[in-house]
Length: 143
Image (cartoon, rainbow, N blue to C red; front, side, top):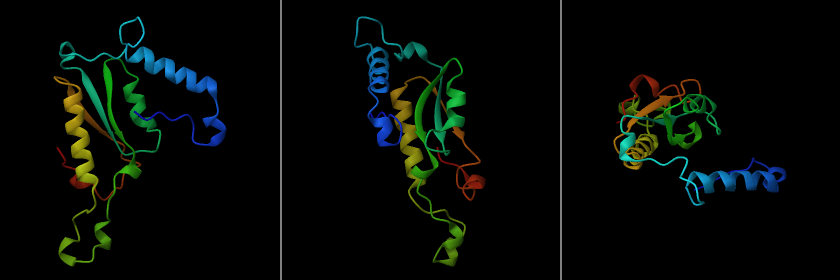
């Protein structure tokens, strides 16, 4: 698990933020005497799990959806994590409409591992249209 406290050294030194996050993880995983806050079980079937695709580093549009009741967080893939090659820059004219790169595999693996992590749940992909490379949107068929 990776947890970030800000993006500069000034924030990294904040003990109050580190303690708040540590407590959240501790309680969330049920490591104390309480029941885990985010405990998934097969009894939660048909709950929605969000797979966020595109957007900025903190994926604000995806988080707006997650804040609604009954929506669990799956993988969040900010736009910069989806490596794409613009088809207009393809070296071969026969591949001028194929978007290259590893983006398709990244999304496929995120979808499959999210399904494994939330058995019985309904994985829904949310595409941040404004911040994902627009040349893949018309042919966006992944899973």
